[in-house]
Image (spheres, helix red, strand yellow):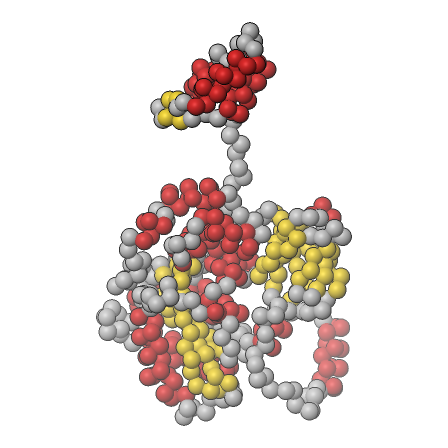
Length: 449
């Protein structure tokens, strides 16, 4: 009813302006003089505000009235735009919190680059006003000062610690800490500092400790990527980056890293640890049985006790975790219904010719590509030319030892196993791990306790 009343008020305002120049008895010259005079002076609009109406607009209203009468002067009903997915708003919030000076138009451009589609700029502006994320509001004060999360899994803080040389390569610890309890949620020692390995540590934490409300990271290259942003947005996690030169909120994890150096790394040299698998085993044992059970000097509780006091965390399903850590790239479908991705060529549905689509994939397997358009699944892309089987960033651990000259194959045991398999009613592959976990991340199959 309010919309209908509003349309009637607008039509009455328009009719009041054009009723005289719309008189068919007037000549073109007389009508022109009246229209120019109306366009030159201000008018009080339906909302009581003063406004001016251009000559071309007045001519358009005159034609509408002559053709359809009073009803033709009513504004057309507003077209309802499709509902924006919640993960898009989450991504927009993360981008605004990361750099409050970003405009809504720029944020829409970043979302379009990451997802292949973005909502209207005005939609994002209205959402920011509702959420209190205008640039003026965020500029009034710091998000992090002397801050502590009020409950477990409200905020995780992530960072990387450079450790000793293990197996001729520097060992690097990617770790995520719960801000409230100081408990290690996800961690992994690796030999390369990149997004793939940062995601591996985060994924271990999500599997074992649940889904946090926010993750706070610095602006290092492993933590600044559209793929990590997509993973957090898919799970409803706000990704926040500290601003350059303003490391507020990072003191707790830096203090925990000092404890790692003083209590764990100091013992590594005398423990005979010579590979990352052994390093991860030792660190998991120390974190879970020593650090998590020692009373913290500030909280006066052990990290495990304070974390457990928050109750059962919210876990993501295996399907949600799988979806979150898929990577995506936007491509435009060619006239031959093909797309190119990292030296590979794929065929897609011919109905998508000329459209920008989202290609979703496991970075370690570029032979399986799912095509999405407008948030809808459009089937798999059919490989035509495969020149690369993994994403350029999905590099294996550097310095992997070459295979020994001896094959290590026990032929007779294989023959016996094949005979047993033929006699067996079924074969279970439940114990087999994905090949890339064995080759890329030593110790990746060992979940954090």
